[in-house]
Image (tube, rainbow over all chains, first blue to last red):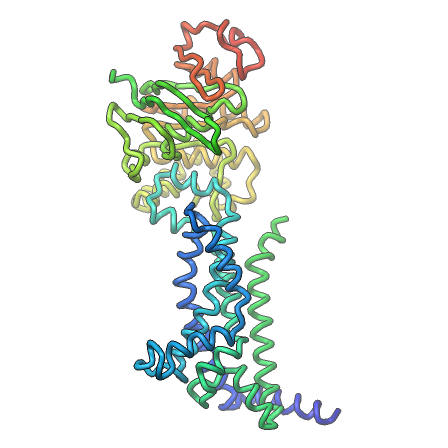
Length: 234
Length: 242
């Protein structure tokens, strides 16, 4: 029992003392995750609106594909992107393997289906009167788009945060495409895996506590944005 | 096309899920008049209003504005900005009452000072000045409708469409609407109203069109209307209206 107590105390000390190695891992992780989330959001938001608002022949098929991709294992994405950016891959000459950009590429592919599906559901559930009213007020196409984004903003932010939480906690993509290089591609999850194997349990635990706190914060904000607002209105 | 017709539709057909909900050979909206559209449930009143107000451009047939064909594959932004609609169950956007009323002017890039002045002016006329800072989602049914009326009128529309604006309101709000609505509408405005309210028809109507199963049953000016023919969609004989 002393082993656990001692590890927890040392882990908390590492956090409180802002241990440089811990800070470096967390900073790298946040930089990569934020970049992935931003890029994925820029692609996913218009894509989700396009799917939710338009009628086209392959819509059902696209929705099925989208839902399937939601449960895609991170290692599968890792293998796919690895095949593209490894030396013999199509993008091999760009030297992206074991770089933050390599991880970002994989993470973007990982969360595009998640953010797109969540925002699609938000847009799909919005009142049809929103569009009719915008048309009757004399809104142009771009103004209608802006009004739609504004009306759905809490749901959209919630979806983006959910995507951020997904990439922050994933390990498969980061490990396969990042290579766990200290100070470059070592993220919270890959560092935790490595340090536990090396026997630095307290260090791994410190990162675990930080990851758990970030997850709690993300879920709290997501709940407040997606459910809390509605709950308060009931 | 004679000058007094501001909008005319010809051979309009609207099909929804393989069912024809509107099939009108010809219908005109008279300029600077109160044009009433009446009929029973499912007679196509709201569908016609949606087409006339350019909210729905997915139909067969032709629509003319002042004799000029309105192309359906275009945004028709310039024309749409001459029109306004008051809905039966209005949609108010997130934000306060001021924001909702000001929206049509913001969309037209009107100067903020002018917006402030016009919002206060129209809010005062509709007796909702106290609500301007209140969140739109906390309003009562009557307050919501007053806000939507203010929003529809603030852009000084050339044609105002009203879709059963008082159907979901309490008696007090209906009385407010009936006693103030005519004053809120300017002489230059054309009004197209879908309504079942006999008081509104009696007080305001210049032309009444009766729809039956998606077709125009009859269109006549109110002062020479054959009341005998008129009854569908209205429980009491139309004679009570005058």
